[in-house]
Image (tube, rainbow, N blue to C red; front, side, top):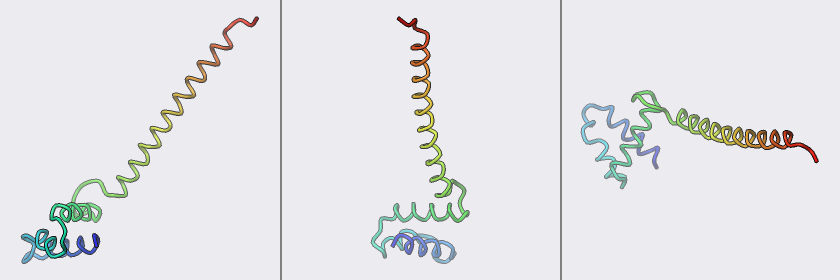
Length: 95
């Protein structure tokens, strides 16, 4: 339903005769809140390159890279802690 509503609104906005109020009209006809439909249309236009901004695929890739970066930083911190612990063990005199 989201894709259909988005497609209808985008097509209505392209037509100069029906572009004014197209989002509200289509939202009322489909029983969707106009702000929700407007968000979907903006996202679709960004993904199509009509509107500037970060595309959905780029945003997903960025989020995945940020997650991976956090995990790697955490792993590096654990390795640093382990290395300092074992270095301290090696520096202690044996009994």
